[in-house]
Image 1 (cartoon, rainbow, N blue to C red):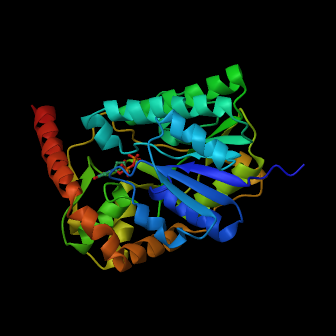
Image 2: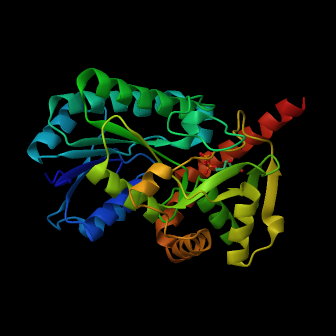
Length: 347
Ligand code: TYD
């Protein structure tokens, strides 16, 4: 029986991964897409404005904590697959204030799971992160590695994942979890390392690197993640955990050096700042299961970085209102906080 999706509801569809995923669905598949997004600071409705009125895409402004709205949408739009991308994701913000992460990432997920209990879904896809395992100093994390989150953000995602598991076991919600390494590409909010480095460099401003910049992450181009998500929307099995990664691992310093080289800027723009509290030195995922399904990353790091840098260069009108708007104030506050925490550490 063909149980591939007909109508997908994407929460957080106006955010970074959401925008790329919805574009992928509308361009590469024939599913209908319903986006629900709260349009917090990280979501922009106009990212997908070109598709409004196309007949296959509906945008709804709303919170995932609004169970009635979600239930109504799922029923009236005949949603058969739910891809849950809505989340607060920035570790530094979670260190400043954990409560919104509990509210959206934990409470919001539980609300969605409650809705999922009441409707007939084929699949509930929970987007998660390698950060739930905490620091991985050697080897790679497997799907059954114990969860040991270090940051409030990671703890909120781990808690949400536990609820997904529990709702699958207790109520039979057809849910599975996707855990990805660091993702980069167009439409990423400028607070994250990669866009932040690109935009600082374009402004000839110093790029703050935590500690000595030797922390290691695996980096995956967002199109590759979107392909993996779509594949899992079609064949993912309830109760499973799926890892998505490129296996390409770099230190933050190496990554930023590549950005600077692409932009023809000097490495002296990298500025060491006091380390993030609880900073995980390394994440690494094993992703054999997806390889068995025929998925593998197709965009090499050099190519992905080149595309990303070009996108930010060519889309000033997208990032300028963010860079100079409310986010400018957050950056200032964050920078002061970082420097103060450094004083405390030294003291
Ligand atoms: P980030 O993009 O916040 O993702 P995560 O912490 O979830 O992996 O950061 C990626 C890495 O870059 C992480 O090791 C922290 C580091 N980093 C900096 O050194 N300076 C910065 O200003 C930011 C935002 C991150």
